[in-house]
Length: 551
Image 1 (cartoon, rainbow, N blue to C red):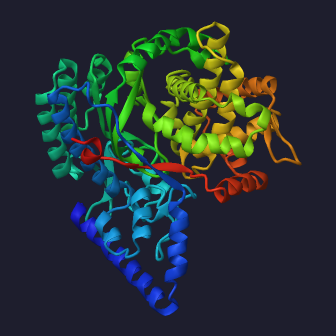
Image 2: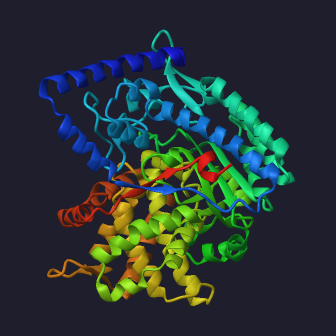
Image 3: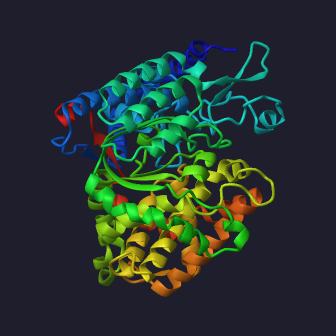
């Protein structure tokens, strides 16, 4: 087996060569002014937001705990760098332009995550679809033919041994030094925990980092309901693995619960089983019963790290991902209220002012944006996790397309749920607010690009809704208006299509859908260019940490 240090050294050598090549170009062509302008433009895709919250209600122990949780998050950040690129310093130390370096930090590598992972540093080609989870010279066919225990596990790296054969290395061995440090910090944080549920969870999560067995800590996390501080940390989402979507990426959130908002949201979790029964699909595609212990909670996030901090930023979290835990306990949908508000004010409202018909702009509201985002996360728990024809889990059957289709399902079923709950009087406000805000949000999310599961999902939905007449564009003004009745029809039709594809584990069907509709047409390109020209950022970056919090 090639050790991690040898592997990273090899990557470093390649990077240094690339950097030298970059410097040679600079000396010969003297493009300093053009490059600086280029990186200024790239960085303008993001607007900076300070991550703070009211800490006055926290105890002294809780205030002492937060710096330790942030240290854990920083370790997760370093692990994600290794997964996404390799040796972080071998890249950053060779970039002299501070704006270029900043953009590389935002993207965790030399590839622009909001532009289809195009390289923006000289000397780099395409981003490997499998990131660093697999050998760069490995083909899909070689992997599928290999008889390796744990090769599809979320928590194994695929390496070559000294003879060149594929082998698996568990995360807790590959990242041994780092996860041991994070585990120790979690135990120290647990000692400071006033809340017994949080103490139990942190101790179990500390053990999980050392074994790659997260079941017990996931159950403890779902049982944790009275805590005011929360930490999500570990290898969690599989978006970074765009080769097979098998491997989980490290990330972390440090969260402060808004107890009042969370209380208001809690009632919706109880409605999940009834909502499952009403899905617009045949009975066999909704035969599973979602866990009734699901929770909805609102948080202010005070630190992002790793996968969730790369490129476009997450504003709501639906976890755990383990299908077994989901069927047993459901999931927790965590709404990141302060980050959500920032995106609404700085991005969504300006987009609506530029692209939505003036008579409908009044329907763009933060409450609708919050609800659409929240029910997106709720909708992850609906449908089925296992195919109906013995193809295994939906994730296993749909491989690299599973994430994009799952995000598309959550978006459209979230709107479906709002519609049904509004009919039952469980959701307040004008339904047009939810539909119009949903439409404006498509323009926001489609800008995340084809390298993002969320971006692909929004491209598919935009084109599907367009074909069904859910919206139209005024040729003279260039503004969009929503046909609310047709949007309802499109919502139901796309819901049924996605649920069927998932239940059937129809890999070829999903591939065809992605190939046909996960693309940006010329008209939409012009609209997105208009947003860029107007200086509307695509997403946010954070000023965050202990000093920002005043601790």
